[in-house]
Length: 95
Image (tube, rainbow, N blue to C red; front, top):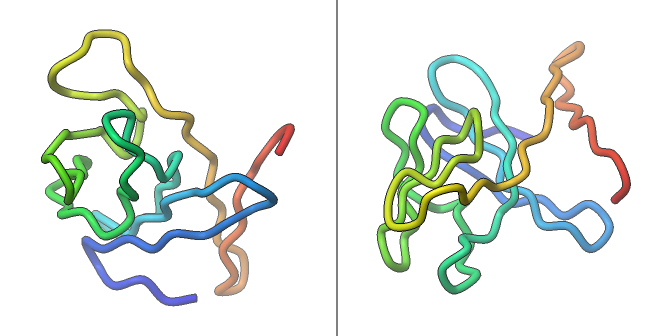
């Protein structure tokens, strides 16, 4: 799977939708659905470690999953990403 710099792609593991991003020379993985109206974050605009939801412009930190505007304490689940011999692996528990 190839993801261009400052871009994302949605993957599905079981019933879980995950947004996988490549930014700043590394991969990040968070829950794919925005808490506002369940829009996919994967096609969102990336700036630094922030993705903007393409539907209603909510902003999330792709490293921490933290929502950066509107509601305090909202955080998406993040997943550890490892790249081994050009293969991308996600560490996922209880999916």
